[in-house]
Amino acid sequence: MTSESVMGTLREFAAEREWQQFHSPENLAKSISIEAAELLECFQWSPEADLEDVTGELADVLTYALTLADHLGLDPEQIVLDKLERTREKYPVEKAKGRSTKYDRL
Image (cartoon, rainbow, N blue to C red; front, side):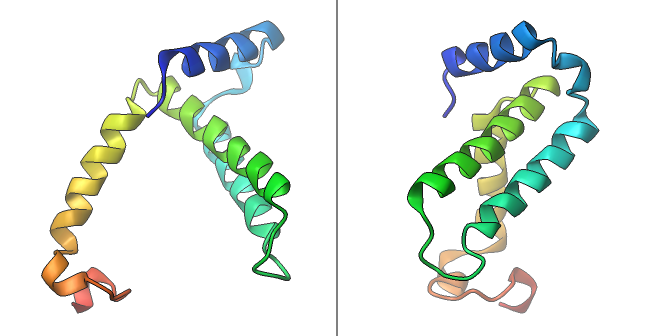
């Protein structure tokens, strides 16, 4: 999912600017939420958003999420796969296929 070169580049970018001091888990989580709101803003008045704007905001969300995972010593690929497995159990295909119903109502 994320190559070591991407993580290394993110670490180097922050180190060059001495930004690690601001990268507490709390600040990174806040930043993810703020950037996710900016991503949503791209679609505020229309389902047709400018792809360049969406790309930039999505990159910001991913950057902060990857930085938070790195800060906490988590492997992004593994936590996604682990969560997918838990979600697979909550939403079995035979009950959830083609439905958006929450798992406790299937």
